[in-house]
Image (cartoon, rainbow, N blue to C red):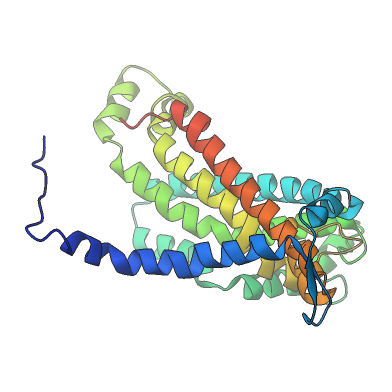
Length: 294
């Protein structure tokens, strides 16, 4: 048992914590309290007059068919993005763990996409799959696939999921590689001596030992899909066609910044914050129980 640290000066611990507490208060609690206050106000577009309407904005938002459609779009987009990003990252990490020559160069190439800004990543994928000038779009049409994400909602969803997952694969890859390197090789060698095949060794030894890393990445990828993919969606589809890719965070922007529905936008941001907090709590409450930390 490690000895308890005792500060000789009782004021010193509070002074050390003060900068972090100040940052949290200024950049999280204060904006969150302002959003909560704004969600119960009805203002004119110029912000000159406002009146308190209690939960009317929430009732209006939750009865709006377009908002319910955004919830469905967000669920499909988030689950697809997290699954594709984590599955491909795990596959690449397992492959990279076997590489002997030029291992560092191979890993560096896989890490590069993480340095690309979301809006730039969206533009790269838009150029590749633009139905008029995209080189890969031309190849798809040559194969007889009628590719046009500007008019087809399902194809637009596939495109934004691919761009968002590609951006996040590098981040997941780094953690999976670190997790794989922490697994004792003697366990895998012992299973191989006992006759366990490569696939069985992965699912019975490697994957269970990667559970803490996978759980951590599940939380991070869920948060990423909810909040950090705005730039990709804005650059690739702008929420279209026909709101087919309008996620919750994009609708907050669309209603607040474009349509000047400030009360509705604030109510949506509060609902979105509650959803993400609830999802994270559920993940820690139920999913973490199945995680073994060795």
